Image (cartoon, helix red, strand yellow):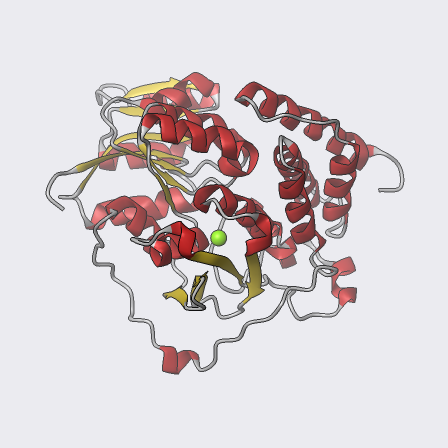
Length: 389
Ligand code: MG
């Protein structure tokens, strides 16, 4: 790579953000960090700011921003707060690439803003495309912003499709680890505690994504994301459970040829691919040893065991703002489960109820999406609070 890439990291204190900075630290001559943003983790972001010396640090939380400002006084780094601050961090003129790794619907606006500003977006936030796929993809076409997937499955598809005409694509086959409960009997679902759901066999991720992985809503969100990223309709996107998480996803072409991308289960691989694109960079991993892995298995997911996966397909088929509604209901339900207010099996019930009772929601602009999102959050909270749920 010839010139230095200047990057902004939204969600720098989360798992993707930290892994991104790990790659930057190993390749200081290739990358320069120009802004960092986090919701409220002052301690981590101040440490990161001292080390990487961005121009700008943004914290959503006002109080956290005040604390960071006093810690960074005299450093020449500006500290901003609130939605405004996060949007400044995502559109800072100096950045070439924005790593969009804020978790949840909070990442939608800043992702859109980066696309609107014509940045390359290394996209880890799923909700931006789930909730506002058509809006963001249209905007990217208008501004020329490139969306480079960071999610391991989409990175795999992106790599397998590279240089080929999408007309030749027959199917996308997304792999799923199946999470901690795959292959267990139905009775386990009634006994799942947050600790059990957070104990993921293969990937280190934040709590929201880990619970989504246990319900397979994560894969459902990824199906919707894949639809928007690659322009493939839902009936040609398939999910297979692959407990070893070696094959990160596959693309089947119209001639029956299937390309798979494989690698160790480490998020730094897809992050580095998005950051370096179109070049590859050297990473410090043990080489993939397929003989040590032994066997690679693939199973059809049981949709009765994982109702969230069906709900996501249903939302994609209904279209409009319904995926945004589904996503918001799921965020509330997962939060309630983690707080002990909702059993694990309640998550798909809440999501299904909110989707069934949702009015028609359009997706012509972000305001409509955000209205659908707020409506769904309220509906989900009301339903969780109602007796007998
Ligand atoms: Mg994934």
